[in-house]
Amino acid sequence: MAATTESVKADAAEAPLLNVKNMILGSLVYLVFYAWVRWYEGIYGWSAGLDSFAPEFETYWMNFLYIEIVMEVLTASVLWGYIWKTRDRKVMSITPREELRRHFTHWTWLVMYGWAIYFGASYFTEQDGTWHQTIVRDTDFTPSHIIEFYLSYPIYIITGGASFFYAKTRLPTYQEGIPLMYMVAVIGPFMILPNVGLNEWGHTFWFMEELFVAPLHYGFVFFGWAALGVMGVVNLEIQAISKLLKKDLA
Amino acid sequence: MSASQSAVRSRAEAIKVSRTFDWMICFTLFFVVLGGYHIHYMLTGGDWDFWTDWKDRRLWVTVAPIVAITFPAAVQSQLWWRYRLPFGAVIAVLGLLLGEWINRYFNFWGWTYFPVNFCFPSQLIPGAILLDVILLLSNSMTLTAVVGGLAFGLIFYPGNWPVIAPLHVPVEYNGMVMTLADLQGYHYVRTGTPEYIRMVEKGTLRTFGKDVAPVSAFFSGFVSILIYFLWHFFGKWFGGTSFIKSI
Image (cartoon, rainbow over all chains, first blue to last red):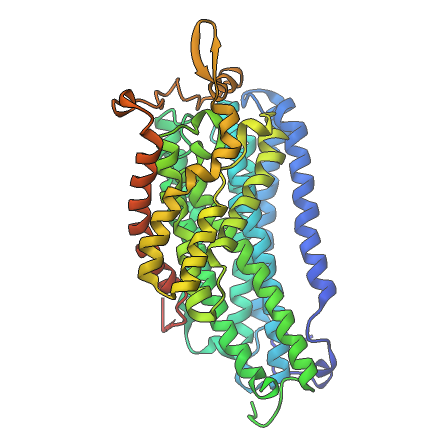
């Protein structure tokens, strides 16, 4: 297969507009993986995650951290690299049907982004509150942080990045320039990860466990607002899809 | 691309495609807004929302509506003003509550063993319904901000009353008078136990009667009006479709 897709193959026109199986499978991958992660937390959080100086902490938690970081860098490189490498160089000359098909694939990515954001920003972030108000931390790399900051956040960053790159490399709608709100919706939540630097720096100075609403956490809040950029993405997409369907829906 | 070519083969397929996109868009919008709203809410009003012994008559009543009206205002600015969908506030709040309930059950209870009747989330649905109904009936951002924002603050405490009232009955424990919610807090000690961090309800006005909750709700409603305006315009900005040439 050529590294770069030069044109749309004729048989592609016969492929289904939306690959429902892929979408369900993708959603299940997130769900099952995170269910397993939650099980792991439940078992090894209490049995091996209370004292960061204990040998079992190294075994069950630090090794988890090292493995996940390597896996994330690899996944991001391969996935983003693949999407970029196989970009369509004649994106403006695709047929309307192919464009519609690509919008569906793009939305499959966005559905995954919705899933990933939910688990990262909602599920594992509030979980952090109850863990740290119960188990006082003695390290920056607590069981809760190893999952929240260094697993669930990178996963939504990788998913959001893939979605953005897909749109930029395969959809005519995004060839005008860089869609500002798409950038906000992806880069904003991404910035939550670098903001961990501020968070950890603050936690090494002050005992902050009493207040989840402590001002030290407001960086997360600010970048969390950027998730609203998804409304701009939705508006852009609705304009593009309406244009494609307008004649047939009239 | 040729303008004469069609993306679909029939009107029926066009309708099917349109409906399928609707579902995918709703799913994504719901969960991304849920994520953003939840991280905002838990880190600006979370402690008051986490524990019953934080749910007092003053600070909880003041803080929660002010920080909660943000995303509903922003989502309304798109769903109503662009698509005439009159449920922006309710859908945002439903998202937040879903995220919170899942968390309180699976994590607060399931991981750290706090009983759910100690860590259930605040109720925000009545205020959200008011915001949506006022916008639907008035079609006015200003009226929604002023009347809806005020109502959002005022109705918060009564809206939570049915669930919080049983925990605010007085009990005597070791010679001290306290509420059942306080007692729950003593039994489930956390780093955020309010007495430990001096976040207890205090003040002079309560000396003269039971005015604390209504006055707090009124103040909260006042600030909610201002926050609504601000976040309506944030929402409009976030809904933009502009492109930039370079980064």
